[in-house]
Length: 361
Ligand SMILES: [Zn+2]
Image: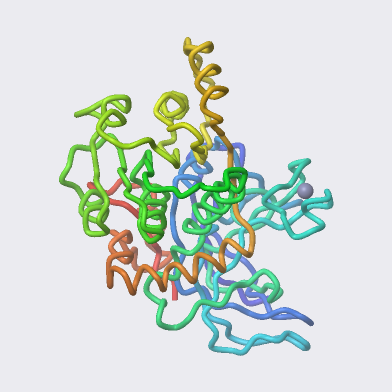
């Protein structure tokens, strides 16, 4: 009998089936390293998987082990694996299929949606004690970032967003973004705010909750401005600002995403980051949006997931955030659950909470 280790899983097809389970403790094979899980982040995607909005078990399995945000330490290396024990690591989530972008290292642009994703689609996640992986999927995190390294995955999502915006805006020789709007103040919105602030932009972040609250305090400490959408409409906020050069939409609400098209400045770029699970319909002012996009050379672009380059940029920016605002990034982690035994608490909403992590190791 193999030695077993605890894990936390759902049964895809059954809503609210979160349960403790166990997996065989793995050993590093040739070219692989064994990673000890130190902590796992919990995010909105996990909640949607628990509600059975999506999520697929690995082939032949009934359960899917949750968890795609992981921070760990290399415990041992198999033959031929060049990664030293003691190295702190995180890992990309998606494993590519065989379409052209996948085959050229851009699985985040998978064209035929034939990828797998740890803890989401077809591969077990990291809510367990150990996993094995090839070093090509692992990203080294300096020991100095041990307290915040778990945020590399959500940060990589906005790193990709900023990279996309920057690549697109090379179309305008004189482009110099000064004013940014971030919609949503969850972990993605907050990390997006810090990222845009770290690039010297004036950033206004809007969300529903009345200020002051935990996100508004973080935003203001980074020199940004928080506005509750309950106090002022998006259009009203925009009239107080210079032309908005960049918008990150991470509210989780498609109506807000289309409202954002109306406040984007000329030559601006709106990056959509919310995976909205519903099927809402609403009348929208087609002619106005179309006219404003044509006359203003505006761009709206979707962006999902992230690749190794975005994780590497994330690690660099976590260090930059620490230099700019010592200790601030860690304030995104508002709840640390004491081990996998506390699994049932991940679905309990935390008052004024931002990010929950499970302290596994
Ligand atoms: Zn693909």
